[in-house]
Each structure stands twice: as C-alpha cells, then as structure tokens.
Length: 174
Image (cartoon, rainbow, N blue to C red):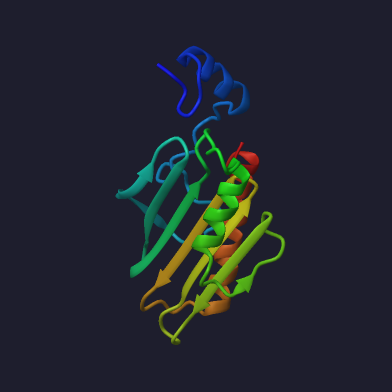
C-alpha cells in the first residue's frame, strides 16, 4: 500500500503522519457533559439529536418550563490529517469563517475569533455564537420561541456558556 500522492510503503506513510499529526484525545460528548453556565436553567439532553465522534460533538437540549426553546452546543476541530494545500489551522479558520458569514457582531474576549447573530421580535429571542480558538470551533445556539427572556440576557448567557465550554474542552483543540 502506498501513501496517497506519495511513493513509499504504508508503514512509512503512517510514521510520517504520526510525526506531524499526533492523535489527540476525543472531544467530550456534549450530551453527557452538563452544560456549565446555564444561569439556573434546567436542561434535558436530547441524545437522539446529537453528533459524536473523535473531532465533532454536538447535542440539543430542551429547557424545562420553556417547551419550544432549544439550546444547541457543538464543538469540532479538523481531523488529524491536513490536506496538501491547507494546515489544520487554516482548515479551522476556513470552517469558522464559512459558518460565521451571516453573523454581523464581533465578540471580543472569546477565543481568537468570535461572531454572533442575535435577533428578537420581542417574544422569540434567537442567538447564535461561533468561537474559534486555534483548532477548536465552538457553536452555541439558543432558539427561544415563546420565551420571556430578553435578548440581552440571552446574549450574556450564550456568551458565558461558550466561555465555560472553552475552559472545559481541550485547550485550543489540542
């Protein structure tokens, strides 16, 4: 067996990849992780609506007393192999920028880059926050249909939750 695009045996390919792309521990399962910083809200994980593997983890949560409100947490990082043309850091930046194109607000003090979109019609606050810290990409979404929470409170809660996740997950996605 040969390295894709290179000459040499599979053993040499594995050794080359292992030296440049060390295996990192898996990200934590978001459904098994009690979300920190939820401001006293009681959350129930919906494991049927989750994504979980070594480099991607997400879960949706129902919020007690708010039947039409959802909270989604997601963390991801590029896989251990980079392409010929992009490093893992470049892939992480590209993932963040593509996912954040429609987010007009920059959020200082979170990771290396953070963008937010927040809107409300007075009864339905919706906030999405994307944060990149080196290889780690964290997303928090709150969709509060029929929620009495005001938009500024939701924005603070989402920001606090993202900050707590950054502290809990492997530093910079390592």
